[in-house]
Length: 248
Length: 281
Image (cartoon, rainbow over all chains, first blue to last red; front, top):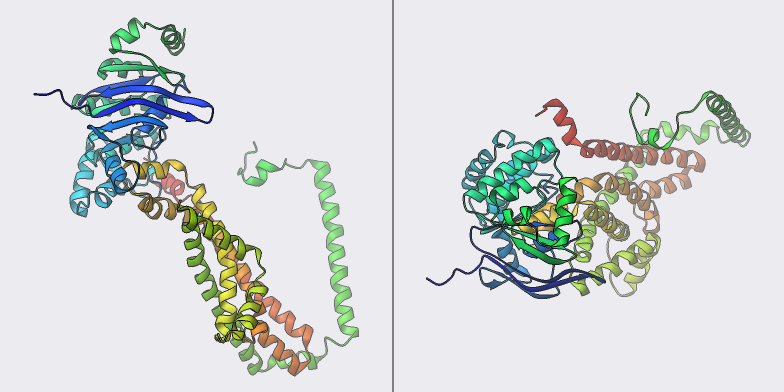
């Protein structure tokens, strides 16, 4: 059996914001079932990198491949590819004018053309899985941040994604709500979901990630297993960064 | 801050102290006295010049007078309603074209929007009334007034809609795109419905402008409130009296529209929060 094609692959990706070189020659591949954590100081480009994978951010040069196919640049092909990659945002971004249930069924109904009753059954199952089925008929603003983020995860899962991107999913949450979201993510990882996670949650990274990638100033500075990285960081930048987030 | 409600006023103005309160009281008293004197002078002048004579007012007791005024009132409402509805549709189309991201379309929409926003509606009315017939295009008086008023308003509404679209947080569109919606569906299903909610109050206030624009209907001899008022005046010589009554009617209509907009603003402002307090999670 030939080596499996990576789910996500980035080759020599570069991106500038004006004079700022936010992504510098990024090379990265994520295999099926792998959980990759992106970590680094703010402004290091980790969120931008995450967002280029479903083209919410464009790139200047290099290529991004999804299961070996180049990421489409526009139109129906791009929409189709985005439907296959889940995305969870820092600020949840639930559709504010729709109920929780409609938030989850919108994608399946509009994109996958799933019949209404089937989509709703599956949505209720997913909402139960993330523990917010009791809120199905409320609107997002009535839910706590932790609940909203779990709904956002359910909304992505309803599309049966090949991979999921998490862009600082717990950074906007009150401390007591972080764990309820992380638990859902841990479970997803255990079930074999391919995940790219931008986060500062070291415990999460240690428990579930296969690989930690440390970025600074638009570059991948070092990468390794979580134990290697957190216990024996090689670069000075990584050591400084870990010291600063550990609070001493 | 203070124990009572924190409104915009509380946020912007300091609560007045005793000196300020006394000063406010004095200024209020003086202003009220000046207004009372002003009204007195006007009424006295009217009395001296005979404007208060029964012959200038008695025809208001005849039902036919009111029937005629009512006819004009309906005419005004009809023009305003149709022009308002047309302007809404045109405004949305112009906004969608402008934000479409298709360069030539967006440029054309930009130019059209600015043109209708910049040109006085009276000029547009002259175009439909004077210019078009020269090319053999004859349209009914109703459309000669309704079309230009609608066009003038559509430019403004396009900008109102665009402001609404820009006010919807960017994350809403990003989330929609990320579950595979096309940009077009993202606009129609996610962004536009939320933008509409944001702009409903301004849209309704814009209706006031439309109602006021319809008053130039006399130019094309369409029987709206203003035109009928002019006819009444030529028959009765009661210029001040008729315009006085008509002004009150316009004020009532626009007051009603403003109240509606305030009501809608309150309703769409934050329905979510009030529901949470009823039914806390």
